[in-house]
Length: 637
Image (cartoon, rainbow, N blue to C red):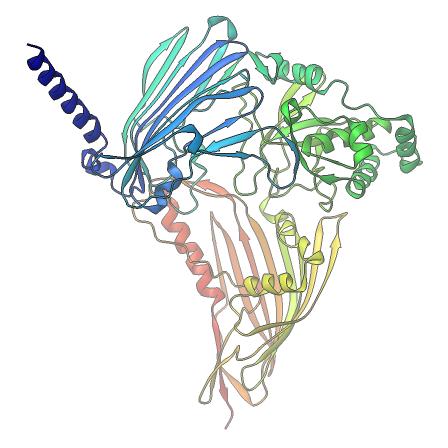
C-alpha cells in the first residue's frame, strides 16, 4: 500500500510539475496576442491592501513573455524603498519558450542602487531592479514582490496597457480599504477595451482586463494616458512621510498643504529682507518688483535636487537657500516667494506636471498628491505670471514648452485652485526671417539671414548664445539639413530676455547648392526654411492625432542669380488654406538677376479625429512639395 501511494504521489507531483512548466510555454499564447507585439503580459496582478491611514501593502505578480529585444523594457521587475517604504520580498524566475525553468533570481541577485540623478545632493530613495541579459528569445519572466509603506498619499495607478506593441492576456487590480478613509477613484478610457469591474463594494474594488491585442504606435498619437484604460485612486484621509492629511476637495488639500507642509518655510533674516527692499528701491509696480527679485534669484542660486524624506515634498527653508545658494524646484520657488513677501508682493506655490513632450494636467476631479514640479504664481489682475525658478536664464514669466497650457494647482492659504497656465497661441510661436543668398556660376552659394524667434520657438534657440562653437555648428547643420556642404562663417546673437525674443544673424556658404548639368542649373528656391518632414502614411488609423504646438513662420529672401544665365522656369506662386493651417509663397522678379521670395506658414495646433489624418498628411505633403520648388536657369551661349 505504501509503495502504491508513493507511486501515485510521485505521478501526481510529476504531472503537476509538468503542468506548471507548460503554463508558461509560448505556444499557449493566442496568436491574436502575438500580432504587432514585442512582449505579451501573461498576467499582471496588483493587490493593494490599505489597512489604515498610515499602512498600505502592495503585492505584485507579473508574468511577461518577451518576444524580442524591443520587449525587454516591459519586464519592469523593480521595487523602490526608503525609510517609509520597505520591500518585504522580491524574486523572479526565468523560463524558456517551452516553459522550462532556466534560472531563479533571489533578492540578493537584484541590483541595489540609489535614485540619485547626478544633480541630487540628498536622497534616501533606492531601487532594487532586475538586470537580466537573455541568451535566447522568446523567454518568460515571472516577477513577484511585496512592499509595505506608510505613504498612503500615493496609491499606484492601474494601467493594464503598459505600452505600445505590448499585448495583455490578463491584468487584474484588487484593492481593499477601510470605509472611514474616504477612498475614491477615477476611471478613464474604458470604452472598447472590455474592462470588467468584478467587485465594487464599500471596502473592496476589483478590475480585470483580458485579451487586449498589442496597440500599434501611430505618428502624433496623444499621450497613452488619454487613450488607454486607467484608474487613479486617492484617499481623503492619507499620510505623506509621517504627515497626516485630510482633503475632500482641492480647496481642503491646499489648506492642508499650506498649514502642514509650507508653514515656517519662508522665514528670512532681517538682513536679507532689508537687502530686498533696497534692491527694488522706489519701484511701486508689483510686477516690476517681481521681475527684479526673479533676476536676483537667477544670479544668486542654482538648481539641485533634494529628495530626503519629507524634503521630497516640503521645501527647504528659505533662509537655508539664502545661505547656501542652491535648492530644488520647491526650495527655489519658495525662496523666491519669501523674497517677494519681503517687498510686499504676493505669490503662490504651484504644483504642475512639467514635461516638454506632453502637456499633462493636474486632474481636476480626483484629489490626490499629483505633479512632479513646482513653479510660482504671481497675481497679475485676474491672471497670473508664472515663474520658473530653477532656471538661471529663462526670461521672467516665460514658460513655453515645459509648463505652459495645462492645468496646475495653485496653493493658497485658504485653499488650492486649479488654474490653466499661459497658452502660447499659434501666432505667438513665431520665426520672422529676412535674408539673401547669392549664387555663383558653378552653383556655390553664399548668404546671410536674420531670424527673430519668439514664443515656443524662442526656447528652441536662446541656448545658442552660450553654446560652444561645435554645438552651434551642429545645430545649424541639423536646422539646414537641406543644404549640403554647409559652412557657417559667422553667427551672432541677441537674447532679449525682457520680451523673450531671440535674434540670430548668420552668414553661411555652401558649395554646389545649385545643381549644374550642361548649360542648365537647378536651384531650390527656399534655402533657409524648408519643411522636409516626411509624414508617414497610416492605413486604417485607429487613434486620434494631436499637434501639440502651432507656429507662424514668415520669410523674405532676396535671391541674386549668377551672371550669364537667363530664367527658363520659375515656380508658380502658391496659396492654400485648411483646418491645419495656411501656406503662401510668392516669387517676384525684381530685375534680371534679383528675385524676392516670400513665404508665410501658419500651422495650427489641435486634436483631430483618426479619419482626418490622411488629409493632414496630404496638407503637409503639399507644403513640403512647394518648399522644394525649383528655378531652372539656362546659361546664355
